[in-house]
Image (cartoon, rainbow, N blue to C red; front, side, top):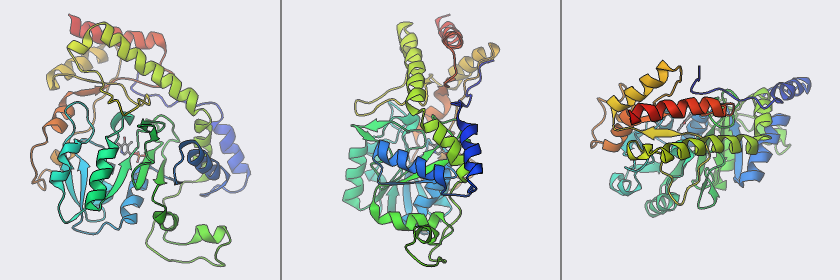
Length: 375
Ligand SMILES: *Cc1c(COP(=O)(O)O)cnc(C)c1O
């Protein structure tokens, strides 16, 4: 059986968890959280980072930080995970759904300006499959209309736009370390703060609305309730797990990209890219080996692919039902048809991609898919 995902353990996870436990401090912001923060700030040059319990939480923090109030409008692609949207819905925002590009599932930047009104407060691009959105154009639009940009970089660790790390370009960015992502901590996430004016308040919101972080640094002699907030910080046990992963980031990335490239080369040399679409990566973007997907003609062809795979015990998956058509939102949606988002909803399929996928297992997947379409 070849599952869609298998979490990869580098070997040091449980040792670091034991060390965290032995240190006597297992709540948030302990030794391993600090090590993770230092790593991400140094390696990717993020202004400031804060580990969170999930990417969902990092997005919720972002919505609080930019003071989303009821009635504010936020522009978000419809083809994304619910958390991208929920974070803003929770604060009373009205979601303005945008369509995807025809060539790939990222937000269609040419449609954004037409969606802006006097109530628009933010744009939330999602770097689908870790492939960058056209950030220069998005940042230009945001600057012209005085909007915030929050990057949903959940899938985008170690990926770049014109040489800049994703998550470092918008005012704020959100990453995920969920077990299906490239580097993992079970559940986990991170907020990146690129506009320094958010840094102080981000620490407070993450610590239940208190200035406890300043207190621990000795900057104030007592801490108290100074703002709204919640418990967004992870235990140091989670950070210990994550630190074992990030020590092996390059090894994980190299193997994932190798698997990705092997899929791509095999399908292209078999001419499958004349029947199905292989992933499109614009010149300005890198591939971080997060996801290998195929775009079929639609539901029928996708079902055929999934069924033939399942018959061989291979488990590809599809995901993202356009959010503007989801049960929670369909009655509220008043906008235009989003044809590309709906198309990807029916046509996109993700293939198994994980560190321990062997070449021979991958060969079985590749052969099964090629045979499905060559016959
Ligand atoms: C995984 C994912 C999330 C949610 O991440 P969690 O850490 O599970 O909260 C949000 N957005 C996108 C695009 C994702 O892929």
